[in-house]
Length: 325
Image 1 (cartoon, rainbow, N blue to C red):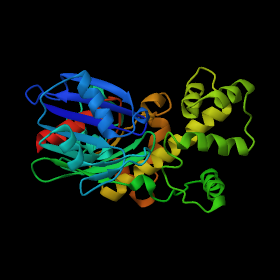
Image 2 (image 1 turned 120 degrees about the horizontal axis):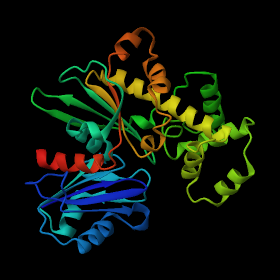
Image 3 (image 1 turned 90 degrees about the vertical axis):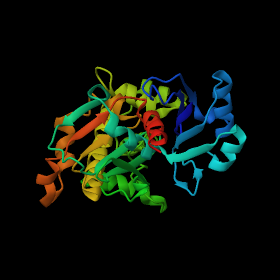
């Protein structure tokens, strides 16, 4: 039996997978709140106490860079080591991979019902694939073809410098850079970034309804409040413009990533935020920004663009990585 995991800064999803039936039919699966545990070992032990099994190996996707078998999670105070986990759980092998590498590994296996397609495009067989995923943070990854199958590669491109594409975004960057700190894409294109965009627009004078201010003041998760208000039938202007700004930045950075890896095989938008904003992620809104790349706009118009709506995609990818060896 294989233990597969997708451990993000907010939620963790774990599953027991029988290689004979595959990851789409797990023997057991459960979701946890990541921050409720002091570390990875405690999380895994809780799951395995609930679902005892004879395990041979584990593949765990984590939200952070993995170097020489050691993972430092970006939005959790955990340091995780493959060898220590394997010894503690008495497993032959524990494999740690970046969560976006796992999500990327799932993309060749995704089905039509796992996706919302914004542009069918003209995919090139064996062309590189780009994956960008705003969740708690902003993850990026890509896949390359070796002539037989795709290989997923991690990236920390979400921490690259934010590049404004219009006057409003230039003002946003200046607003965030006042204290001299680094302004990355993750700061403006993630679950953490949405309250930042809201605060910027509030500082520019957009009105904030009293009921919204009260909810935000009482909320442990301001992002959820802003998104819920934005998707209601008559959203407050400040929430609507926050989401529009977020989507414009996401579309532009998805296009940037597509250019960097020449993603002729397609671009996939994943993460926890996009499925909650599907009414706003329309071809009319996204594609003009995604494709606005000057002399390469014609090339961009040929690239497929999809939104991943299957919340299990990262977990599937972790299992597929282990099964592929």
